[in-house]
Image (cartoon, rainbow, N blue to C red; front, side, top):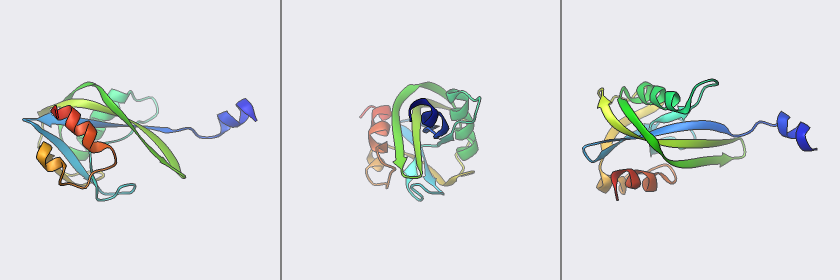
Length: 137
């Protein structure tokens, strides 16, 4: 069993997302694909082989929303564990720099939401805590 089986079985995939804040609001995307299709989440996606977490976060943010941001520290981690996949997602803090928020790539819609709106939206699991932390609530 041991080492041979551990090396041949796939481990968790790595993902990133960015909690971009501007004027007391956070940038959210409505997911266009499973898992969590139609739920609101942070822009993000998979890390490509050889790509740093920061580079992946900035790339995914730009691809999904057209927004550029200055990344801060990792403010949280989340996991998606399902029979068919296991993804570990690093969540970066981000400050808006430029661009117009437009839905692209894997996003059905994009919006800026303040802390009051967060409670009214259907969010991906665990997202409210991360967003409220980033907004200081």
